[in-house]
Amino acid sequence: MSAAIRIAVAGAGLIGRRHIELIAAFEGCELAGIADPSPAAKDHALAQNVPCYSDHRALLAREKPDGLVIASPNTLHLPMALDCAAAGVPALIEKPVTETVATAQRLCAAVRRTGVPMLVGHHRRHNPIIKSARETVASGKLGQLTAVAGLWLLKKPDDYFEVAWRREAGGGPLLINLIHDIDNLRFICGEIVEVQALTSNKVRGFAVEDTAALLLRFANGALGTVTVSDATPAPWSWELTSGENAVYPRQDQPCYVFAGTSGSLSVPTMELWSYRQDPGWHAPLVREPAAFSAYDPLVEQLRHFLAVIAGREQPLISVEDAMGTLAVVEAVSEAARTGQKISPGQIMEQAA
Image 1: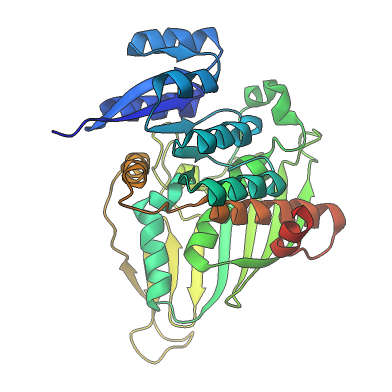
Image 2: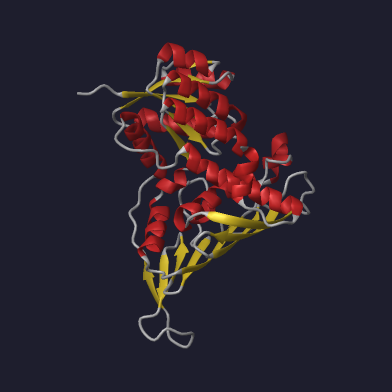
């Protein structure tokens, strides 16, 4: 039997503990240790019967894991990933890949220089619903893609904002939540080349936005709109519609619509709408289910990470790819600030 692949985790917060749980349960995988300075992390490591280090560099040096999951605060993503590159340890980096496009470019350079593989944790790309939507669009079933509509509408509870950074710029739904939806849309529809945006903080009056409206232009010519608010009771968001995370009560509603010249697809309800014959608004529409298999995307992400470590697969979401998603989010913020159309390409050039 081959030896188990030893994976360590840096950051034992909510998502870090989920990674720890998955690693401990995954056949052929072993938890090598935890890096986190908090007393709670030390207790958690003791319960897992693994060593705990206050510094990830000590963990890398002493435990020599086969891979490291970086589930630390965003500000630590770059230094931890750079240390992994220097040590020759592949990393799974939680989103966003780094704080800014400029720092992501530094990490891209390190990956190119060292050849150490890095996978970014935009885990929804591993979701069978998202994969099916991508395949449906790519197959031509919708014809030429013309329009995309996305909704991210829900209400965060008041106690969510007792954490100070969630009331400050960068702590709102654009960078924390919308980044997932932007990555989904890029993965399904292709590159976003132009952004316009408006934001508002009228509901709570915090320094950070609570509502945003986006207008997107895709490289294939399709146009998209995305409406975002974390201040309204509503069922239309990936969290509440996908069933991906059991802590959210699932709603039987779509949060994305992809429209083309031959048909339209609602996601995650996965209903394909088209005409059987003689297309036109007087003809009856046919509704068909779009097929997909059910599995846990976080489990699939871990399987993929192990395959990346073993050299059997290339990262589904590379640092460079994830930087493209981050560039769109930065373009949204800049478009809202200036009132101008902003290209993610401009963001890349300015950061270089």
